[in-house]
Length: 252
Image 1 (cartoon, helix red, strand yellow):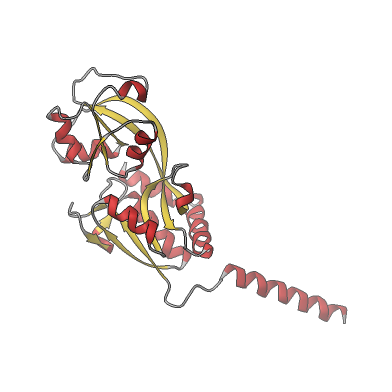
Image 2 (cartoon, rainbow, N blue to C red):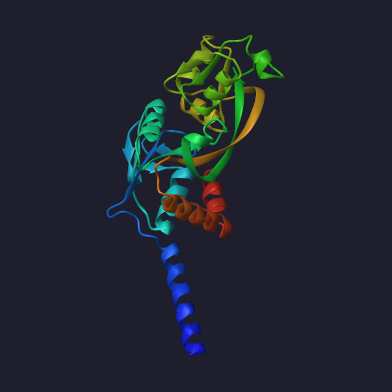
């Protein structure tokens, strides 16, 4: 009788563990993934401001695809413009996700997070050959600083009492900087330099590096916890088996 009871108990525990590991999602559940041109992390293959599925590549794009595959979760993926609109859609719509999104304390309660997908830094860039250097953001506030609307860098500057001149496309800041409409460009490194090269500008100088940041997949707060857990587990496995490092090295 004891053996029968023990077998029944073990079978019950195994079934319970299995149900936890494979908790059912609603029928037809699918995450609507949004991204933007943010090279080398996510970008359209043809450099346009709209793309779908295989028309999108980059470090984060490849990692996110593999992550969803391993987690067994369906998704759609599109690249659009501008970031401001994508950000608001993900805030407002259940089952929406956005990457590559910089994780900040201010944003922490606004989304559910999976990551990090990659690491990056925040910088103030000046014209090629410029000797302009600042030691703090407070000192930088004396100058006209350009940024990207609703980007984490711009949000951080605003939280520090600064009033950056925000553009709807980060590329616009390249010409603004070169034409003297702004003194400094607040952007992400290496993204800013990549965008500048696309606009035919190289040799930008770093006036200040003021933050190191991590890029995540941000999910609407109504996303089921099961989805977040499966994706995070898949990403952790990808990092452990070397997939994340291999993809990153292919681009940098």
